[in-house]
Image 1 (tube, rainbow, N blue to C red):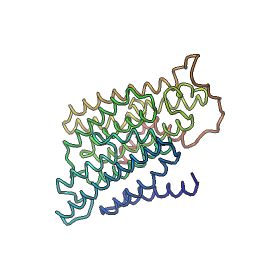
Image 2: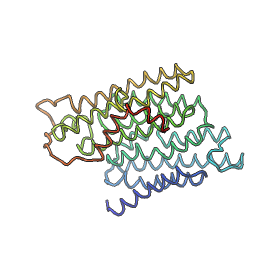
Image 3: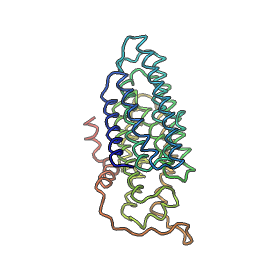
Image 4: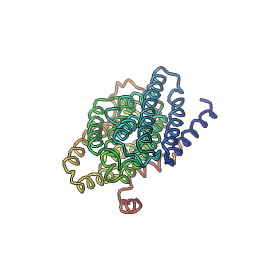
Length: 346
């Protein structure tokens, strides 16, 4: 892709995200979401491969449907209340339509079908953007309207997302699909606490972004796309692979790594809200995710491939250290001792 075109699309992504997260008017929020959608589509389809074109078309159709529902929801609300302010969402039908639209934008169950397919057809860097940056504007809209949303509906969707993200990730061999189902599962954790503690949702999202970005950038460095190639990548960058295992375990939510912090706080908050059965269910469902993260970690660092391997051994390359990956891996694994300071800042 032409560097100027890539720069234009990247700046458009930044512009669209900034417009949506800083707007109070429904039309401005919708405009930002549309700019984002149109900017990411060329980045998805830049390889001119049938799978990439298919992913771009699926992404466009899903996001167009979600944007239509968002506009419909805001129009119904404005018709009944005379308000175009995002925080003034009070009509129940408008609230239901908005929840549906944002669930489609994010890939929450039952509107998750497009997400693994689109991620599988995208390059690793674009898949990272789809899993992190592109989730930020819809989550911001959910935060602004959290007081108007239906708690039962959100809790049901959250538990379904955590369950499906865990179950569907178990049998995958493609790493991008595993990370897509991981994303769906984490969105369940963010959604379940949204109404009771919106700041905790935001904290969970930020930490999830650190961990996911670290994983995608590591995979991009080792050029691993499926489990069989991951088995031979340890010869390329042994230190990075060891750090990669820790980041995966952090994403699984194991103490004493960073990923344990949001899950611990969410379970604590649900218990305070007298939702202990819900907290128990979602904690048990996270064990499904733990299994496939352990599987990834096992393949990446512990398993040596059998001698008659179908893949050529990678050359050991003494590359200069990537500061961004090093910083993200540090944030993804070592923030738990700083949790009092993080909690004080939110």
